[in-house]
Amino acid sequence: MDAIVTAGGIPLPEDPLYTYTKGDSKALLDVAGKPMIQWVLDALGESKKVDHVILIGLSEKSGVTCKKPIYYVPNQGRMLSNIVAGVDKSLELDPKNRYVLIVSSDIPALRGEMVDWLVDQMAADPSDLYYGVISRESMERRYPNSRRTWTHLKDMDVCGADINACHVSMATEHLETWEKLIGHRKSPLEQASIIGFGTLFLLLFRQLTLADAVRRASQSVGIKGKAIVWPWPEAGMDVDKPHQLEIMRQDLAR
Image (cartoon, rainbow, N blue to C red; front, side):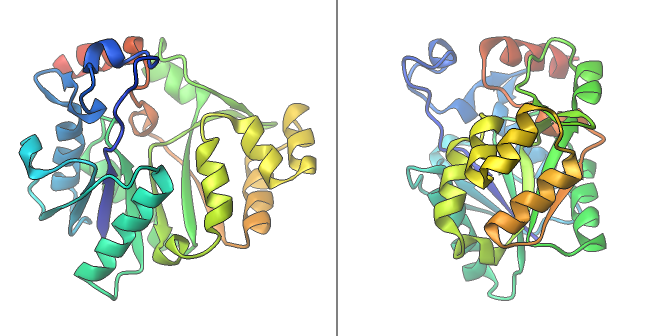
């Protein structure tokens, strides 16, 4: 399976991380002695399930490396466009490919065994889209000061994982809906309103379970989706703010 790594983000002056990046790529921020994205590439290199790595937004000049064959694709400007370009590259490498992993460049605690676990979950239940979530209990036990954005469900509070997977058909179908959902990925209420008023109502009053949310989202888009509840909070510990960067620097330095 190929892994698409999204690394096109360059913080603007109003972004909390701008004072750290100063106009350079967020993915190249130093974390415990190496670029943040290098930790992610090392995990993918350790994975037994990953065949190729497709890196979106950086070039060979960045100096990052991977044990698996790595292919560079220019930043397309928008998250969805980057994913589509990554899928196109995967199909160019092997037209028989059916699934891809979509991995953020800012989850430096990711490890190879976690990547392989996700691929095993996919094999057990073929679907169109696999969206990972992490429970608040699990995240706050591992990273008590992470201050994530939580979706408050009836059965649990969750945040999104930053490594997911999809069928390659997702790069050609339902693109308008995906654009809206991805554009509001930091706002569970906005995403719920896109899926439908009933879903938003249930979410507001905490009457929506995780299974209900998956069913409603799948029906709205017209796909078969599956929620992956991660046992490893590392998959969702992304670096969006300075305090999260410092948490990861201290954690990985150990």
